[in-house]
Figure 1 (tube, rainbow, N blue to C red):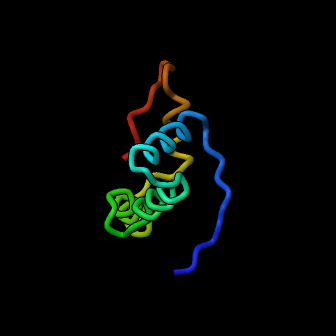
Figure 2: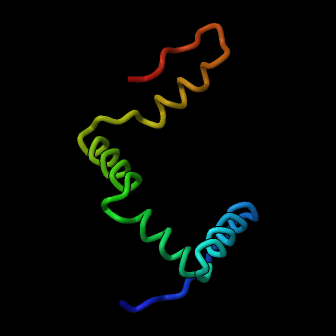
Figure 3: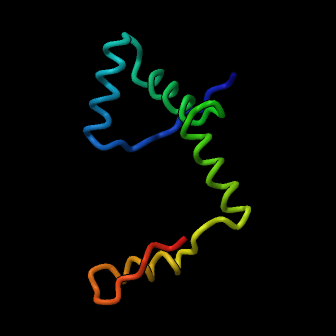
Amino acid sequence: MAQTPILVNLDEAVQARLAALAEHRRQPVSDVAAEVIAAYLSPDSWEYKHIEKGLAELNAGNGISNERMEKWLDSWGTENELSPPQ
């Protein structure tokens, strides 16, 4: 499979964790980063499945609008605090 280089900006803590993992595995940081990204995007990953489930719920009309969520959040700490939107 052809590979394409990309530039990713990481905060120092994430970069340090990635470098430590690469050192522990005795692999280049770029190889470990590519593996982590591929695993995250894999249809078998829990993240991917969670995102797909959420999108399916939204497409089925089972979501909460941004407006309703903002109205609820704006009511926090007021005398008329609203119940969470359903």
